[in-house]
Length: 429
Image 1 (cartoon, rainbow, N blue to C red):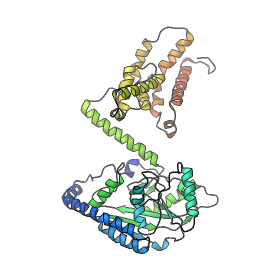
Image 2 (tube, rainbow, N blue to C red; image 1 turned 90 degrees about the vertical axis):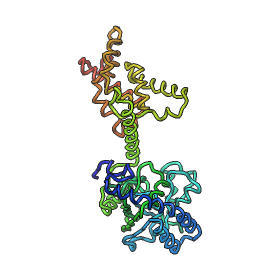
Image 3 (cartoon, rainbow, N blue to C red; image 1 turned 120 degrees about the vertical axis):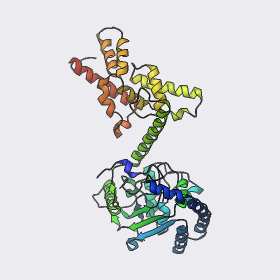
Image 4 (cartoon, rainbow, N blue to C red; image 1 turned 30 degrees about the vertical axis):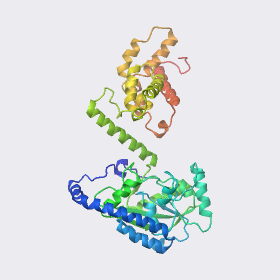
C-alpha cells in the first residue's frame, strides 16, 4: 500500500488559510451565529420527534427532512445495491455523525467503543454493549452473537476507528470488525462543507455539532457498494485490506498503513511542539535544544510535595541509565520534557557536554573497575549518537520497558568498548 504523510490526512486548524475564503467567512459569521441559535432550537424538536416515532421508513423520511433544515443534506448513490439481508455494514469514518446519517437511510446499530454510557450514549444514537465488554476479544464475541441472533438490526462499524478529513487517504483498517461476520456490505462516505474543516483532532462531538449548525450546509454522499464475502483461505487481515482498497478506490483516495495510534502520537507531538515554540519565544532557547519539549503539564496541578517526589523518581530513573550526567542537568531537562525516555535521548545526543566532566571525575582503580568506568563514560559519549537518534522511534522501541532500554544501551556501550580495545567477546569486562 502507498503511504502518504500523516499531515495531509487531518485538518489541524478549523479556519481556512485562503484570505479570500476567510473574508467570506467573516462576512458570513453574523448569519452563521443566527443560524446556529435557530438550529439548536429546531434540533431539540428533531430529537423529540425521533424519540416519539417508532423505527420505520416514515420516521426516517420525516427526520431526514428535518435534518435538512439543520444543514445536514444526505444523498445516496446506488441504493439498489444495498443488501437487505446484510448483517454488517463497513464504512470509512469522516465525522462524529456518520452513523446518524447512514441511519437516516436504513436502520442499523453502531456500538459505542469509547465514551460515556447511559443516556448520552443512547441520545447520540449508539448501541450500548454493557459493562461486561473489556477487551477486543470479548467485544468481537459479543457482536458475533448479536449478528447471529434473528430479528436484529444490521451492525455499522468503522474499521478506521477514528476520523480523517476524507480527502487524502484511509487509516489502516482493523481486522477485528471483519471477524464479526464473513460477509460485509461496504459503504463509501464522502462529506463536503464550505468555509471550514469537517473536523479537527481532539475536538468533541458537541463542538462539531455547533460548527455543523453554524455553516450553511454539510452534504453527505453515501454510496452503497456490492457485498463482499471472505474467501475460505483468506485471513481476517487480508479481508480487511481488500475492503480498504475497494473503498479507497471508490472514494478516489489512497489506503495507508497509518493507524489510530499513529494519529494519536502525531497529535501529541504537535501539541508538544506548539507548547515548546510558545515557551521558547517567551523565555529563549535552552541549551539542550535537541528535541521539542514542553513545560511539564503534569506538574501544574499538583502540590509542591508531590511534584518534588515525582521529579526525584524520574531523575533517579535517568541517573540509573546515565550515571555520569550531573543531577542538575537531568532535573532541568526533565522539567521541560516530563518524559524519562525523551530526557535520556536528549542527554545522549548532547553527551559531549558531560563526557569531559565524567572522565575527570573517574578515579584511578584496577583494570576491571577501570573498564567498567570506561563503559559508563562511553554510555554518555557522542559514540552513542547513532543509537540515540534511532532510539525509540520504531514501534518496537516505543514499547520497550525502561530496563530493556538500559540493557540495550549497556550492550551497545560494551560492543563499542570491545571494538575499540580489540578484545575478545569472551573477555570479562
